[in-house]
Image (cartoon, rainbow, N blue to C red; front, top):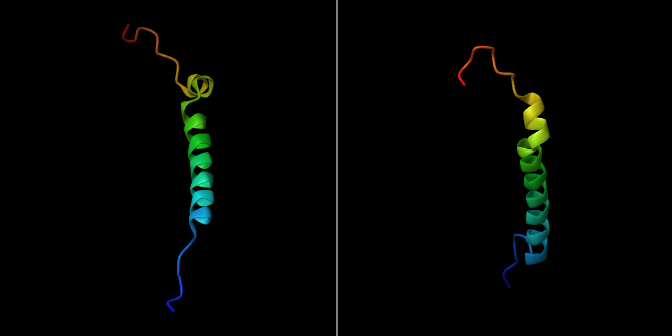
Length: 49
C-alpha cells in the first residue's frame, strides 16, 4: 500500500478558515473609515478645491 502524504480535507478547511479570518481582520483594519480619516493629512489652506 502507498502511504498518504498531505493533509485531510478537514485540516485544509480548518487552515483556510484561519487564513480567511486573518484576511478579514486585516481588511477591516485597513478599510475602517474612522481610522482612515484619523490617519489622513489635513488639506493645506489654499489647496485644490
